[in-house]
Amino acid sequence: MITKKNFFSASNTTEFKIPTNQLISTSGSSSYSPFFGSFITEQARSVLRKEIDPNVGKNLQKVISIIDNILDSYVATGNETSNIQPIKAAVNEDGSVALDWISPDYRLGFSIEKEFAESGWYLATTKRINEMGGYGHFSDQNNKEITSLLINFLFSNS
Image 1 (cartoon, rainbow, N blue to C red):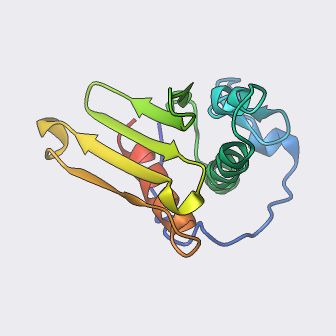
Image 2 (image 1 turned 45 degrees about the vertical axis):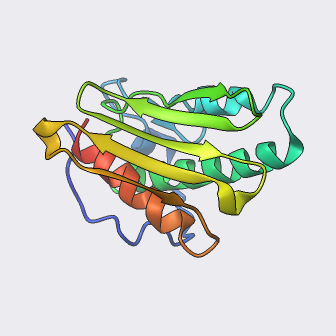
């Protein structure tokens, strides 16, 4: 079960120094631990070990770090991440990288390009979640805020 909280301020860069036993679920079901790497973003991290364009790799690392920092914030405030599926990652024919969370009710993802300003996000939902859709490009000013809002959606609907 996930406790919903307002995470619109998750974009700050506060470091949380919490004992490991407070970050790992006592039931052993937590899928996220910043000390052992994130199961949620592991497939995305594995793309970094492939031969990809260095700029795409740099931008992918930036997005993975943003996601991991937001997950750290959720865990540090007592939220469970075991309901969140691992993000899927694939290298596209044009060399960009696609990161996706896919469920029967929504598809949420990121497209990582050579130029960070050309990288973007998208969200599409079914009628069950009000048939919403949106997409946009990242900028250095909005990437953390947008990602935080998308992760908040993910927590609310997983």
